[in-house]
Structures are given as structure tokens and as C-alpha cells.
Image (cartoon, rainbow, N blue to C red; front, top):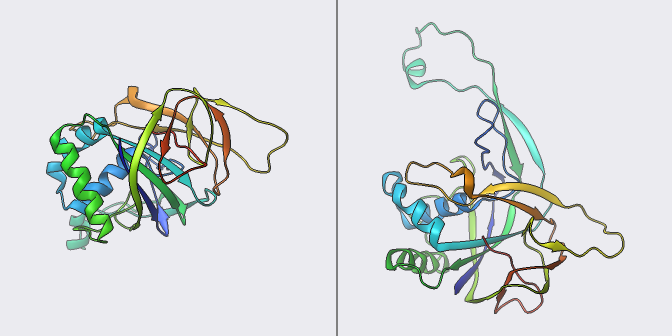
Length: 244
């Protein structure tokens, strides 16, 4: 399997949990669907065309995330108004209360992206073009971390091959699934995080409810001793990855 490692960071991020519409909360880290959105932005794919790209790359890419700092969230209030209210100032509308949104402060991720070996030609071309663009520090549209007012910085690290291991003991800094067996010896000086993240978006921009995955993750580049399936990446001799 072909793979690429990236660093993606920014000042703020918001990866909306769909069940929190009125006062949106954010997932704890970048989701697979948000990463596919970044691929589209880098390659200059317009939103209408992304309708078919989301399911294509959801099926043909795998990804893993190492959170390089602590997950720190803040809530901010925004008053949203329609365009007609801005243009026609005489429009009589009731006062609107600020809408609270949850943001991640200073998100910083190391991300491994793998192309499934038997991917179809379109997915392979998109992956190859994305790798080339990140190498050359090119982006057609500004990549964002969930929202357009949360621009992302993308740094290419390396590319290589990934080898799948069905089972075994390994050490990792990335998230793992709830099916992995965590090996805890003694007392740990860091906390684990838990989230349920989307892995598939259809051509109506809908995250399939049955494709969410429960994950456990360390932060601040802490490592976990784990038993279960994983991937070896040729540039990481000590730490392995779990990809979804």
C-alpha cells in the first residue's frame, strides 16, 4: 500500500458533530471526511464535483492521526444573519442571540494516509496528484480545518509503503479502535481520549451512521502499547499505525 505522511496544523479547527446542530460541538481531532475535503481543496475540485469524490476516497483511502499537542477546546458565540438582512437594513427582524460553537485551539496533527492497493484508477490519480501538490507546497483553494475561517497549514513529511499486520503487539502514537486490546503496565502520566468519528460520506454529503468508528487516542505524542491489527510504515521503525 502506498502511503504519505503529513503535518497539518492551524490556529483553530471545528469538525462538526452532526447531532449538535443548534450549538455545534466538534470532534476531538480531524476526521477522515474533513481530510478528504482538504484533498479536494488542494486539487481545486469544486463542491459540486466533490459529491462523487467523497464516497470514492472514503472507500479507497485509509488514514491515521497522531495528535501532537493536547486537545484544548473553547466555545465562541456568533450572531448569524441572512444576506437580505445585511443588504436591506430596514428589514424588521427580531434580535438574534449569539450561536455558540466549539473550536479546537492550536490543532496540530501528524497524519498518515494510505491508498488501498486495488484502488480504481480515479482514486489512484487523485492520491498521486495530492502527493505531488503537497510536495510542491501547492494548493488551488485554501485548505481548511472544518470551516472556512480555520485555514490549515500542510507540510509534506515523506512517502513510502505500508504493510498490513492482521494481529500482533505494537506501540503507537496514533488512535486505535475500541476492538484493540490496550496493554497498561503501571501508572500512566497522561489521559486517554475517546471519540466516535465518521469514515464515509456519500454523494449527498451525508455521513453514513453505520460507518462511524469508536476510537481511543493519546495526545501530546504519547505512545500506547497495544495488541491487534495495525500497519507498518517504512519510515517509522518503532511506532506503528492503526488506519481506518
